[in-house]
Length: 219
Image 1: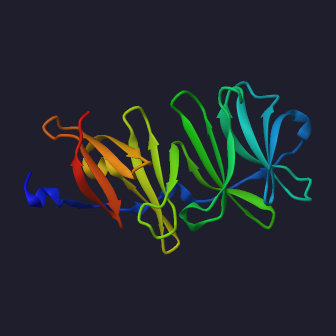
Image 2: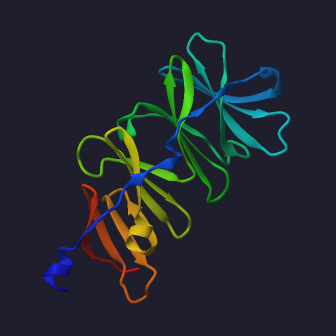
Image 3: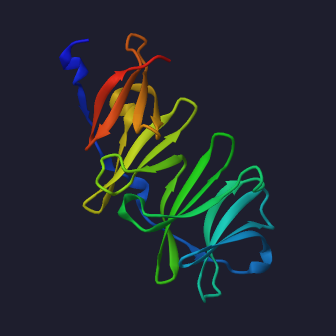
């Protein structure tokens, strides 16, 4: 391989993430129609998981209740089936430089759900709704974690970052014309398998909006 190939750098195109418009949530009209499953205390109140008795499918919903406020807000479905097989994880997050509540669940074997909630004046809203696995990691070492999202058996992987208050996204599969892009969080590198059989799989590392070639890898 030539020195030029070894030093190859690919500039990524980040576009506005159109699905990032905050979604308003509504209070639950009557708790009598709910089957409560669990609750998790958080800094601003608690997250409550429940099912709806009139549902024809076994969706699990999340609700937010602010400390000292009896109103329960329905923030939507976060899992499907029973919690033993499709658990829901509730954590606080500072990814993308924003203070949020992160909910992770699943709607099937390869159907991840990740929601980020913000709370203002005791009222929640869904700030970001992803049908993907999301890894929070500081790719460029600036102290703020980006999101690396992946979905599918042949992984479709994107990087989400904030720039001047706007959420941006770059699809690595599209940028690289790749069949699959797999993120390896332990080493913070991306393994790329190409659509063209003439191109060998490669390893890249993210550096300030670019991907730098590291080496080839064996499948």
